[in-house]
Image 1 (cartoon, rainbow, N blue to C red):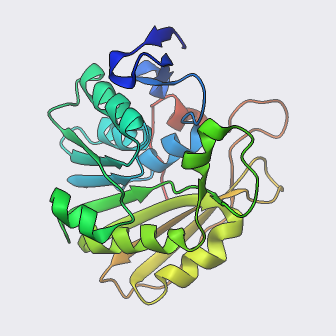
Image 2: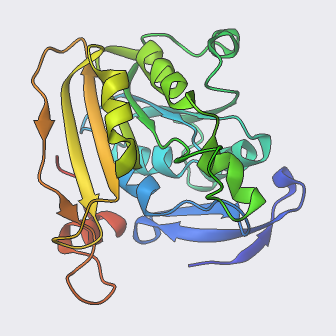
Length: 259
């Protein structure tokens, strides 16, 4: 569902109201620029059941964090976003979906530890941390629209700062989950190696037999559990544009990701 809408919180820029989880969530997001999609929903659905306190790093309009809270009715969440307009939309989306009492939005640069400390973001405090970092190094011109650049490009070595932020704020035995392009897996594993245990990698491919384009990576702070590489899962059926049954249930809000 999409409905053109003008939101005073974002200086009257044009936004749409879009339905997620089969209409269980309705989120405002800009008509132009980066728009939340499948990655954000999958990330929010990947949180382990029963997690009480969730931190969404680089939350955008709040999609992944609010999906996680929709699956966990007792959980609390903090959504961190550096862009003030996107953070304003995230706050409005919390209110629109009746989640303002369970979710706080913080506008800050998550890659700066001094800024995080000054804002009072709790160290060692979150049972789950989820992150959907920008996918491309800014040295590569892969983002055609300037409005998308901040959400999909970042300076070289910044992924390490995202990992550092997640490690700093995860509670002992807390889980850290990243979704990223498959090509970034070696870098992610190098950054997490020796810092997290029980690391699990779930490759996501467009269709069965095709190369994975995305990976979910989860690790547990303080664990010494072994590394696990799961079989790739296909988002779509072999023909057509329909989703495979597992992902169709996730996108309709009828199930979460089991991994």
